[in-house]
Structures are given as C-alpha cells and as structure tokens.
Amino acid sequence: MGPGAKPVLSLRHVGASYWLRKGFFRRQRFWALKDVSFDLYPGESLGVVGRNGCGKSTLLKILAGITRPDKGSISGEPRSATLLALQLGFLPYLTGRENAMLSGMMLGLTRAGIAERIEAIAEFAELGDFFDEPIAEYSAGMRARLGFAVAFQLDPDILLVDEVLGVGDAQFREKSTAVMTEKIRSDKTVVLVSHNPETLLELCGRAVWLEDGCTRAVGPTEEVVRAYRDAFGPRRRARKRPNIEPVTAGRAASSDGAGADEPGVDRAHIDKGTDIAHAVAPRDAPRTAQGDGLSSKVQAATGSGEKCGRRPGRGP
Amino acid sequence: MPLASIICAVPGPIMRDKHYFDLILYKTYADMRAETARTYIGYLWWLIDPLVAMATYYVVFGLFLQTKTEDFIPFLLIGVAVWQWFATTVSKGANTVRAAASLISQVYIPKLVFPTVAILLAFLHFVVVLLLLIAFCTFYGLSFSPSYTALLVIVAVQFLFSGSLAYLLAALIPFIPDLRNFVDYGLRMLMFLSGVFYPAAQLPERVQTWFYLNPMANLIESYRDVLIHQRWPDFGALGLVALLSCAIVVPAIYLLTRYDRVYPKVVD
Image 1 (tube, chains in turn orange, red):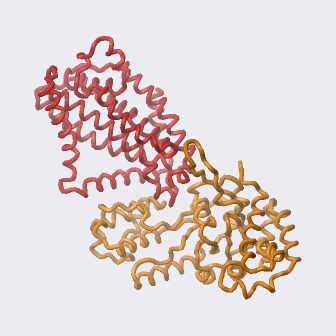
Image 2 (tube, each protein chain N blue to C red):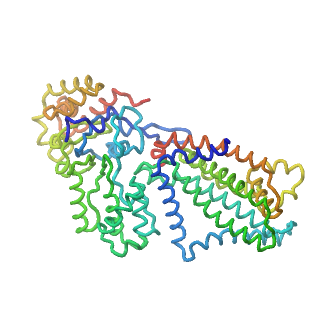
Image 3 (tube, each protein chain N blue to C red):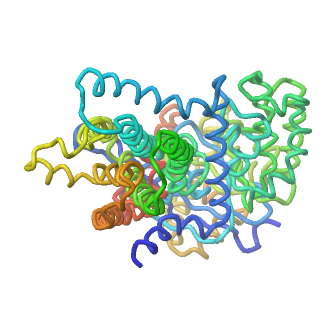
C-alpha cells in the first residue's frame, strides 16, 4: 500500500518547542519543530532526511507519543507507535533473561508476549549460557546483541527507527541489518530517520526532508534525496545553474500558502509524484534570486525560515 | 468512605491498563533483584541498615545522654524502622521521574509508574523489617494484644502519607530541580522533630502541642502505643494524617497525569 490509501497518521503544521533555562526565572522558548506536515500511509516506509539539529529526534518523539506537539495537529489513531530503542532500561546486575523481560515490557510488549518470545530472543542474541548471567559480565558487543534481539521483537502499528539498522561485530551486524532491512521492506509501517541518503534510497519509497524544523520536501525518495543533495551534497555546484526557473518559485509560493490549511488539498499537492517541484520549490525560490552557489545554501535556509515565520513561533 | 476511594484512585490510571500494572510489579521485582544482586549478602542489608542506625542512636542517646524511658531498645528500634521507611520512600520516590530521564525520552511510560515502583520497593523492605520487629518485641517479653490489629491501619496511613509526598515531589522536581536539595534538608530536620529517639513525654507541655502537628510524630507514637504499651493508637490523629495525605496526593496525581507528556522535555 502507499499513497492513495487512508493515511495512518497525518501531521499538519506541527510545531514543538522547548523552554531553555536562561537564568533565575528567565526562560527562552526554542522551536525545534516549526512547521511539519506530511502523511504516513499504512504499510509504507517513510524516510526522514535532514542535517543535524533539523528536528528529527523531536519529530520522532512526537510520532512515538512521548511528547505532544505545541501547535498544529496530528490525526489518525494508530494503536501504538514505538521507537526502536536498544538496551532500554537495562540494569547491570540482572541476567540477560530478566533484562529482556524488563526492556520488552518497557517497550510495550505484554508480559505474556515477551515471555513467549524469550527463547527466540536468546537464540537471536547468540548468548548461549550467558543469557542467564548478569549483563554486567557481558562485553559491549554481547549487550548490544541482546538489546537488538529484544527491540526487534517489537511489533507496533508504526515502527520508528532512528539510524539503527545493525549492531555488534561484523558478523552480527550483517545478520541484524538483514533482518531489520527485511522488516522495513515488509508491509510494516515504518518511519526511518537517517543521515545517510543511500539508506533511504535503498529502503524507503517516500521521504520527508526536514530543514530547520520545517518540511522542505515530501515525495518519492529519489526526488527528495536529489533535492537534499542539491542543497547540501557534494554535487550541489554542478547542478546549480539548470535549476534556476522563476516560474517554479511563483507556483511554489502560491501552492504553499493557499492549499496548506486544507488537509485534502495539502495531501494532494504533496503526494502527486509529478508535483514534487511544489514541495521542493521553497529551496529553489530564493536561489533564483541569488545565483551564487554558496549563498544559495544560506538563502535556502532563510527561505524556509521565512516560510515558517509566517506562522509565528508563539503557538497556542 | 473517602479514604478508601482515594487509596483506589491513586493507582487508578495505571490499574486500568493491565500492562502498566504488570510493568510496575516487574520493575519493582527487578529493582529489588538489582539491589541485592550487586552485594554478597544481598537481602541481609535490609536488616543491617536499620540495625546500624539503631546501634548509633543507642550509644548516643541511651548510653551517653541517658535518655530515661522504659524499654528503650524496642522504643528506639520502632522509631528507627518506621522513620527509615518514611525517609526511603520520600527521598527515593522524589527523584524517580527525573532519574528516568533517558528512559522517558525514548519510550512513552506513564510517569506515575516511577514513583509507584519506589514506594512499593520501600514498602517491601518495611514489611520484612516490621515482621522482625514484631518477633523481637515478643522475644523481648512484650505480649500480644488485640490492639495489634490497629497496625494494619497505622501502616496503611503511613503508606498513604509517605506515598503522597513521594508523588508530589516526583511531580515537582523535574520542574524545580532545586527542590531535590530541600528534600534532604527537610528529611534531616523532620527526623529530629519526630521523636525517633526521645519520648514526647519528655518535652515541655508547651512544645508538645507543636510536636504533634508533625504527622510522623503521630505515626511513630502510634506504633509504640501498639507494640510497647499494648494499647489502641489515637485514631483521630491517624484520621487527620490520612486526610492530609489525600489533600497532597490528589494534586500530585493530577500533576503527574497532566504533564505526563511534558516531563520528557523538561528532564532532558
């Protein structure tokens, strides 16, 4: 399944802020997410790409229900959305078995469910007799294997993955990456965050590009990744010139402002594969004004900042 | 009965979801295992702790200062054991939400779970200590009496009182980290004001009125009434303590639920 079906989750102009303590009674509000909109469809794997500090982890926390957005809306009612967290809540003096139980329950598996899977975990982690020894005696690699084996048992409606694909030594990394890749490719709904565009190209049908807390582009992974690379990747200079096209900028501005508040319209413009230019356009817009390669990068960022700025950072 | 409904209301939001109820129980078991597994003599530490405290106070107050009271050893043992339960619950429970920072920023767990685990853990310790205390009192020559049944009420009231403080502090400390330091000061001060190692009767008349405003002073005295003097405790005072606890626990639970998904932002 994919676009066309009913989204399992719809984000509209989602923003999230933190309070930074600046001194006694002085706080400053910081918007980690300013304006994020996209749909997640059942069974798809959606990639999230963006540079450090673009708001990826904040977005994952909102998707996982750990925190709530401070503005905007999320619709859709998945029963569970869980971040694949490794070695969650591990206690050093407990055995591997006990830690697997504890960690699994914290990740949302029922006590009976984890008890049922405990042998599978032991086998997958390849710990042998060490499974019933305190994990304080484990090597870092053994602990990583146990952590992965537990987290891999998770079966939420939406699986959120932050960079982790494989762990451990070469052999286990290969094995864990293989099963993880398989899980992402299956008809499970997955949101995969990665620095590495190659990973997204390989695993995700669609992708979201986050920049400075805003969605810069949503669409087929190849298109989004190409746009992302154009802006920040090594091939940026080479591709700069042919992209200058004033018309695109105009269309982008209008479609972005007008249709944005109406969910139906928004989804339509975001998801029609051919229309990717709309979504990507905010990057192009300032670039047309600025020809220069280096400052186009800066412009691109300020451009999106303005776009977010139209919805001022003083949400409800 | 309002007390019963409040006691049920406390774990209410968690009890409704069996999964989190299971999680609380398993986490309590796990913490208990972790506590004992990292030492050679494990569970024995549960007894050594109050015994060492008792020995110290006995030397200072019984031998040096010659505190005059009959049955000073059971008197002291009761004071120390009861106080330690209270102090552990409050000081451990107070920091739980903040200490769970890395956990709650990776997965959603109702924040009520964390103080509840600390409260249960401290309670388990106390149950063992109390049973030994009763055994000791019998061995010491103090006889059973029907008033022993009142122990159930006293323990319930203290559970409610110390738990309510633990919930409230756990809810507030993420927002006001400095409060953590006041918890330690407060507990230290309260210990000297609760009659752990001196009888209230030795205080001047004038001071006694103030002394009994302290819930812990009333609780400790209630245990002594039952275990040493074989008489009924002051149920009126216990009722007031229970009422006060309800007044604390309701807003505490409200805060923990209201800001359930805000804590991960604050404790990071």
